[in-house]
Amino acid sequence: MKKSKHKLRQPFKVLLPIGVWILIWQLASIAVNKVLLIPRPADVLVSLGRLASTALFWKTAGMTLLRIIIGTVTGTILGCLLAILTKLSEIADAVFSPAIRLVRATPVASFIILILLWVAKTRVPAVVSCLVVIPIIWENVSAGITNTDPLLLEMAHSYSFGRFKTWRYVYIPSVKPYLLSGISNALGLAWKSGVAAEVLCAPRFAIGTQIYNSKLYLETPELFAWTVVVIILSMIFEKLVKRLIAGQSAKKAA
Amino acid sequence: MRIEKLSFSYENKKIFDNFSLEIPDDGITALSGPSGCGKTTLLRLIAGLERPERPGSTETGHSSVLTGKDGSELTPDRIAYLFQEDRLLPGLGARKQLTVAVPGCDAHAWLELVGLKEDTDTVPEKMSGGMKRRLALARCLAYAQDKDLVLLDEPFTGVDPGRIAALSKLIKDLKMPVLITGHTEETLKIADRVINIA
Image 1 (cartoon, each protein chain N blue to C red):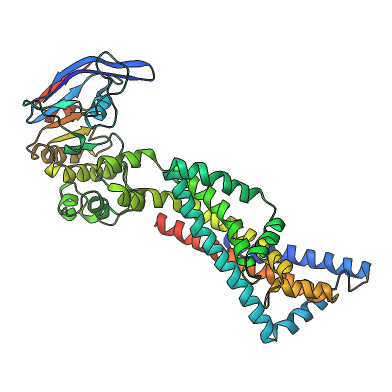
Image 2 (image 1 turned 120 degrees about the vertical axis):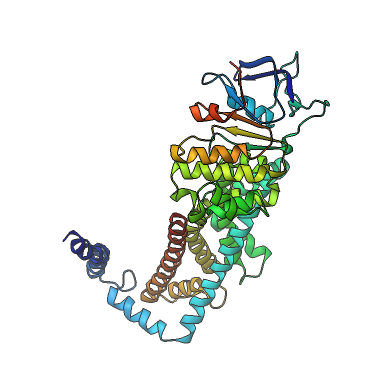
């Protein structure tokens, strides 16, 4: 009996907030009564449908997705390598740790403008996403290394594991949950910063460029539609990573 | 084998002060004494995991504290140590625990000897305390095959009393010097001699 009650609750839990906020949006658009400021949800849906029926939409969304993936993957790899390096070497720690903290504290907008001076504008979104991801991954992986069970490290030493085996069987399993949580946290920021870079750099085939053009030509329903696309893509991405994390945990518990 | 004039302090508390001990280089020697008297610390010092003080100084000294009859040092890489805790690798099956720590060992045979032949793929997270202890003991004894000394810190903790006899026989059959600690009667029973370090 309780189970069926739970089954009924789940879709209700998801649909209720969506319904409430769409209703508030609809009421706000009626109250303002200016499509330029707040288009109606139906107008946005029509815009989204119109956009989705073109090849340009899929190419644009695909290219943005690719840039974010490249930025996130590169940032994750570099963040891991830097964490290992700064934990292994005091000199590397003294050199890189303040620089990574500086990158973390620098406003994303400053980065975008600076990087635009140094690299081709098509590459800026991926580079910016990468730079946003690095400090998060670095911090999480560093915490994983620091919190590695000292008793297991002592056992590895006592059983003459050697460096490679110690990393493979002691450090990596300890770092894994920290890394996955870091990726999950970094994804949202990678999307936000990547699309912001696209808005400022306006490369060809980019959601950010489309958002900028929509604003330029006062196509507010389209601007909303592209924003919805970013939100949906970001959510799908996050869900996939969370599923991966849950899969890893379940595998471990099995 | 002997330990000569060993001094060691922990958090400003003197655990050993000019401590000397003769350890027969055959059979099983049990270390006895009340809790906190330094049995585990002594094993850790012998295993090279703690550093003793140099005589007359508070600086840490050489990591080898045992010397043989001929005066040669017994270095930690010649010692197999069963820790007081199981210290098994999380998420790794029983067979893999052995092959990772002791490459080339006959994991199935060792698991059978400690009564875990049905649990070759069972991870420590799914094992009882006794099973984990038996697996840790199997790993230590497999590692000990080409070593000169075995240190066993409370090997029977949590082990089902019905299985202790088989494990005791396994330790006895090693035919190499063993230093053992433990509060249980079984620990003292398998020892050829008992040394009180209190």
